[in-house]
Length: 529
Image: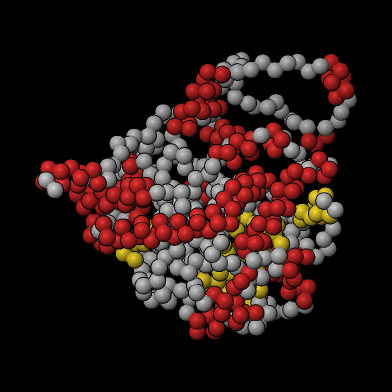
């Protein structure tokens, strides 16, 4: 091969960094654009017959005590305002979500979004008669059947609108189960440090004492002997994420379940992001009693963070009676909502939860089929193993803890410990600098810092090799910048809609909260605008 041709091939193979700069409009909020008397649309006057019918209605306590304080703005300014605001966002449609580890930010097919806006779905009201809700109830029922098959469970509830609420509801079911059996003294929950932190937090909120197992320094997984020492007659349940947030799969998980069951402890599987396991392994096959999927992650509805998502609870047969109400049932070809559930933990959400997330998950599963779902899992793992290898090979200053040869699954918790020691720049600085390359910031879901300067990218099946190569090259470039000009990195982002965000103190005081206003009314009142 000729030398000039070799050089041309080398150049073509190089990853090109895009010249990115986000729009920055310094746009006021909509209330600040309000001009008294302006209108974007003129509403018709209320018909005389309607006004006469309503004139004698006493609204009592629900009646407004003052006029609505709505923005008054014409249409062109309204359109410009929201167009500018959208340009100042870095959503999944215009940036890479690889850096949002533990979140499974995958592509959400637009056909699902359009269907959700169809009036036959969007205009359904939960107080309609059940005879007019057969379509959406069938979607719930069929999605239940699909989730049962994928999880090895006997029944699902789609009422919780996020993973945290699903875990809390499962903890309620654990409590109800032991009360129903007359099991006294069951007041401890066993979990692991690298399970989702909400496994411990939600259970603690319900009054349980939490025993957290530390990872083995070699494997990153809970030590078996320490686990057995933690179990006792007081153990109400184990709550375990698997793969853990390190991306490491516990291949002895069925043994953990068996040991807990011998003490009549309930076994709860946190599969909020199960992207590596769909069509590959099932919670029920490992012996778990309860589990949950996040439909807004694994099953391709936009990421929710306690809404608008769906933390779908799955359970074995003996726990069905404790599920939140109502459940969706079928009889003689008709679907109905079952509220007559004496042992249920009760209501966890109004009406039917988030119907849109359930519908999108239904569409995604039906479009892929079981083979397609398994393929998505396989590609997710393949992408992550390729990306992890590339980062460790090409990005100096990175380190992989618990490196005993185990493969990571859908994500990998890496460390910039070496970079911090060498340059003084850590993961927070790299996080902010990513924005200047058109990548959304690393999701700071790694607290507590169980490894120094952690980051947990997750390249699910939505990203191809070019996307992963671009992401790795950006990290490599930022590491170079940390060495050459650390202050520039520390003061980033420089090309974003907003500059370096104000740091949130570790412990917020009352004084800090005096600087906040979450509504326009509070803002006007607090700052006398």
